[in-house]
Image (cartoon, rainbow, N blue to C red; front, top):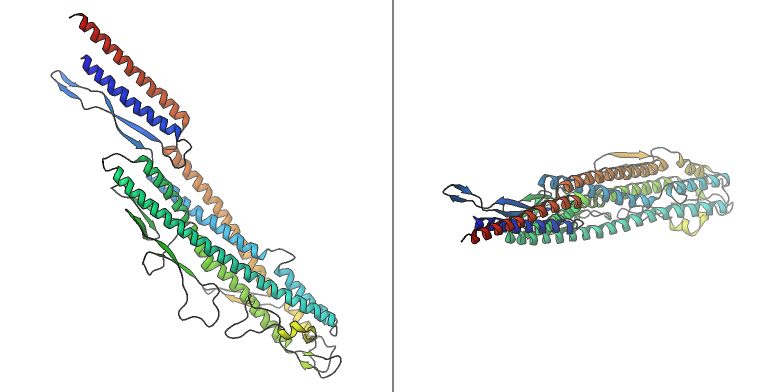
Length: 482
């Protein structure tokens, strides 16, 4: 009897020592990112069958489990992908919005006003060289602003391409690390025990990957995980498939320069575009392939049709050498471009003749009337002319308006998109926070709760020591009778 008591007490001491070690591990890692609370699962030892019945043999630790809920993980990672997409979209659209910087005295709205005002002033003084010099200067400033916008969009695109490249590199690095952890987890769990710390490390990387690429995780029976990006497998067992970026250069090449060559993502050797994608990756590709080309396209349409409208009216005028009549036919005000190099925001500029000599600017529409102002009036009237700019989106939708209306529409649309992305990011961040709180309620460490558990286990440990004392006293009493 006493030997059985000693055995039971010994198992209790050893078991509750493991339980205390587990609690200590939880307390020590209460602030460790990605750590999941652990719990020692206690079960009775295998009982012995005796003539007078089945007798217990004590207690043991069956396993140390990790408190984790797969469904809560899925909910968190889904919200995390939404947050990554919305936050990245907000940041990128905010940078596009900063390119235009409206409202501003140095923006396009003011530059257009000054340009039309200069033509109005010239119509009031059709013989004034000074007024022509102002028109020349305002035309140059307007052209330069178009050029600057295009340059900034190009710089922004280049920065986004670099960011996409680093994002893809990070995805590949995380995928390789997850595949390596798969190997370690499977090897560590071959004896039936759970590799808690390795699983925590892997889940931390899966969380990061979900924000970047909107991945989905499938748990496998052997303890490994498969990671899907889009509809394709990024990680399967011990292998990770590399993600790469390719430029989708049109074939055949267009006759006009293609500034914004689309990008596509490929997984391994697959010839197909990776789709769908989520997280930060989705926002980066969308802004590169859709948003920046769309706003550049609107600027190009505006620049091209401004040049066409101004040149059409200007070439109908005449310039004079003093008061000598008849005057000479005026040439183009802006450089007209060519079939292979049409006018775009990047290329708009004054015609070389006008750039060199403001006297080449026409105000008169009558070869025999140097003081006529019909051309300058007509050009000033372009300020209020309707439907002077038309742009057709890739989906066939058409936007049209006066020069000022069209640009204001561009800025307004961009502002709405940025505001919507900001609101979506705020909502997504709240969803992530709520999902994380739900997950932490299961897997997070509460030091107060752990201290309560420690006191409970400590009492059990002390009770086991008293059991040993009682067994010893019984044994001593038995020996004294011999």
